[in-house]
Length: 203
Image 1 (cartoon, rainbow, N blue to C red):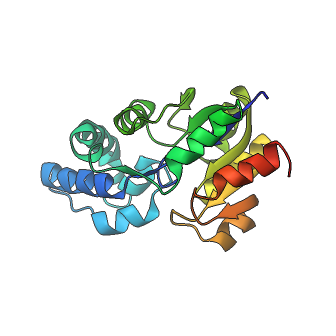
Image 2: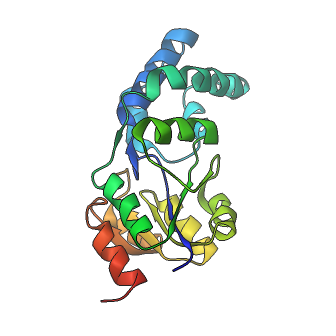
């Protein structure tokens, strides 16, 4: 069998809320600009600039992005854990002879730190992409299904012309994911191996 399964990262494969919360608190301490970390971690998915634009004046956003990314390795990697079923989901992909492709809005170098720390192996990693911007990477890497927790991930799958598999481990409800075009919606990645066998091999 050829092809790949694509995965979003934050709140799809990893629960990065504790680490990102710590990074935002460190950013507040460093810059003196209050970022409500409790609120920010409830809406992970869009690019970092989108969130920081809620707290910093427009002229300071790029500097805040740079500072946050410099703080990120120290504060955000260690507290982050896999989402339920994530490790088994990746194993299921490989058991069918498919590749794992991670396509995320997170900067690729930071995404790689998470994967390495948790022992998760991706055959390909494409970072700093969001919504329709993910579609080219999905096509380039031969992704046949794309798994994500955000409506923007379902838009990415739809744009790339592949089925989107939504998980409700992030900020979006099952109804929102379906409305955005999800072909399947799961509560987390625990049922994913069975679903993948059904859609890739057949009953």
